[in-house]
Amino acid sequence: MVAARKGPRMTLPTQLVLGVLLEDPTLERYGLEICQVAELPSGTVHPILARLEQCGWLESHWEDADPHERGRPRRRYYRLDPGSIAVARAAVARARGAVPRLGLLRPHAAGGT
Amino acid sequence: MTRRDRLARIRLLAHDLEVVLDGKLDRILDRHLAHHLALELRRALERDGDARLREVYRRVLWLEFAVERNYLATASFEPMVAAARIIRLELEPRRDSRLLDLAVAVLPLRHQARYHEEFRAELADLPPARRIPHAVRLLSRSWMLRRALQGETR
Image 1 (cartoon, rainbow over the protein chains, first blue to last red):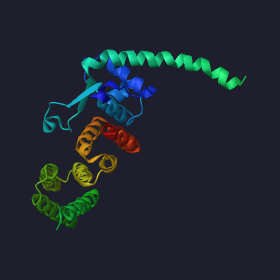
Image 2: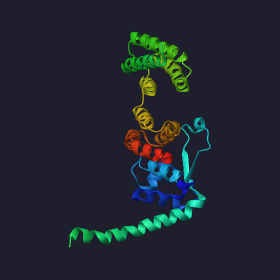
Image 3: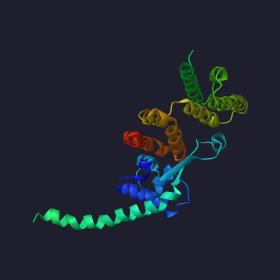
């Protein structure tokens, strides 16, 4: 499982999605809910969730409910893989730590001296 | 007649019925026409086993009953107009569903069923006014999702 060891690219939306999932790693959330909590435009979370799932950080399953009783199709619930919580938390912390450093680099780049 | 043709015909009948009912049915001729259309609509629906159409069929039965009752009581026909409109809207192809179909069509085949259900569940959670914008955004990101899903085999 080489893919499971390789982490995803830590873009800002990926960090936001992971942030939502890390708030309470035992809590299962569905795509639209993650999108709303992370305040991301709808549709952006699915590619991120797919990547996180493929690298083994995330697990998903169908809602255990009868669609006819609920009156809607089943939701797909996501949560962090228990074995990847620490790795994910560290990756988010690392990525967030990198942002201020990038910010410090900007004046030099703009200044051109 | 194919299922698609039959649905198109039912849609047309329901629309005609709505137009007739919107005329308030204050003439005996309209009442007969409404009955005729309701009967045709019912027959068309009876020939189809779709669960959604069974619900429409239930509404048609109620509509027929309401036509008769309202005619006898010379009361308002507003409830019937509303019922006919609901029938028509139920039978009309939904634009958000078409957008979802397109969004899912670009995904790898083995993932299509999963995301179709997942996206439909999301739309069902949204108020009607937000469904089409959401479906458009899902469509606009579908190639990105395709690339993400294909990443697993690379």
